[in-house]
Image (tube, rainbow, N blue to C red; front, side, top):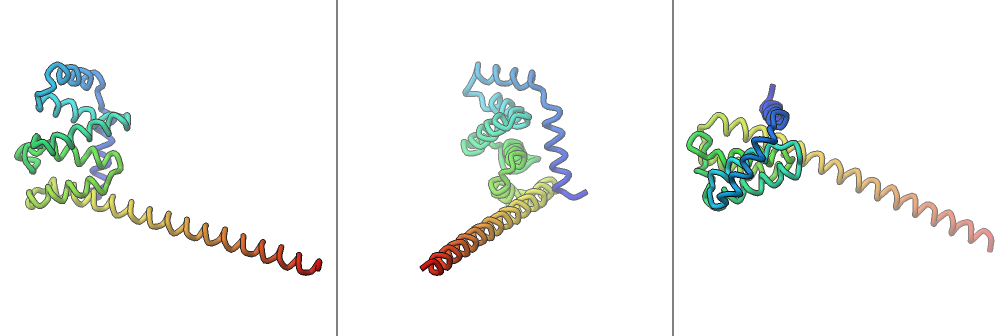
Length: 168
């Protein structure tokens, strides 16, 4: 099984095992003390595993804010960089592979010997490449469809013009 499949299974398992009661409790605790980054981190991590896409996106936004604000706990997974790791996984689960790749590459530079970060990097690079190829294929098909429509339109005009000339 490749890294992409392993990461996909991990993300799916975390969504399947999502516990709304725990997330609601974490939200209430954070709302009671909004300045507490640990409570926000706990809430954001749980929120980023919700089966509801909008909630996962909100969790990713909280995690991103924590990383920007210095609450990422460092760059590595083992040294407390859990927030950044969770952000990367959340972005992956949302299909935001380009953003996930930027973050994982930064983490990879900070932790070049981490097997977990290397696996995450390979999985996201693969997903990003697949997304880019699909996007190129879609653009090619759209261009071909536009060309075909234009050619059909030109043929119709030529036929109409020729028919009008014959009537004269």
